Image (cartoon, rainbow, N blue to C red):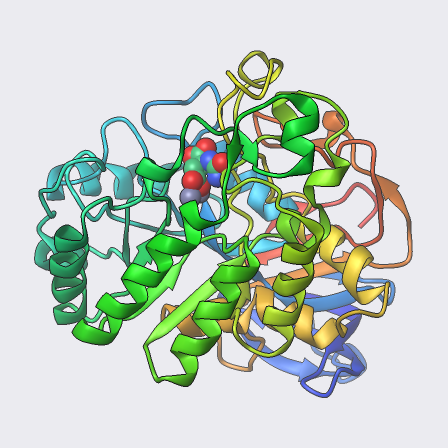
Length: 429
Ligand SMILES: NC(=O)N[C@@H](CC(=O)O)C(=O)O
Ligand SMILES: [Zn+2]
Ligand SMILES: [Zn+2]
């Protein structure tokens, strides 16, 4: 199959866009240039990109696809299609499933499901400990050999320092990152939103910033001790940014991600006690949000990840006291980042693209995140000129639990290509 994507604008390292045509053959990028048609080369299909923005397929280190165990919220098929609609071609999926893929057999079952049902590339995480909340560390040797890109108990923090220490040693031995959801449960006190003026106003129990940052502090020192690559999920507070910055300066092997919702929203936007505003970590205060922006800018924060966390309408349509934590993110991440940061002049297009492509790929050594001749034809195309509404009806995810419904954005995905195959195409493409 010979495919030509013509008339695109490719983002360059120097924050310019270069008019380009992309020639795809045998799953790879054969050439990037202009006028291939005029040279008399024949293609099976030619797609006119109409001057839209072309980037490497996006890379997301943090999604929840809920299969097996919670398929009413999402499946590998619907989650991967939703990711493709967001421009993602490679994602790492979380193991808070039922059963938890904590043995080779269960992990291989997941790999088979992915092979059968996914339209994009999924690297599935293995857990750190059996059933996520035990202190018994999984067999990292065999799960690494089976393909786990890294180990994580996302959804729950590792509560015991000794377990974290031993897990880091095992992960380091296998040359795999230890990926942490950082939350000290003894500091949770039943909280369901950020502890501050807003939680007082709504009369809801708060989650203090130290619930996150105190566990990060512990782990940074353990990472220094063990030399493990320690990657922190969904960093949300100014104290976390401060201590990660300091650890990086001290040479600790630490990386971290931030989510679009924590960069765009703060707790003051919570207008009512409703589950759509509930996620873990919670929307923090405005000065936390500013610290996250600064953290990205100065390299303390390495990349942007969605933490796509689908839940059904019934589950979310209740008070924050009872609703589950989490919001969907795959289908809105790029357009939200483009609209609120690139268009708003806070970050450059090159920066946002880098944090959503090469940077996450580099952190986990994934073959993804760049457009190069001879490399996989994993490509995303965005329309940054037409304003669209974020609408429930358009979601390919089984769930639409997000506070961004009804928001207007630029940057809708026009086309997503994985290994040379078109896996998402907007109606008019
Ligand atoms: N982020 C969330 O609020 N929820 C996630 C778990 C997690 O990422 O911690 C989920 O699995 O629903
Ligand atoms: Zn988490
Ligand atoms: Zn998560």
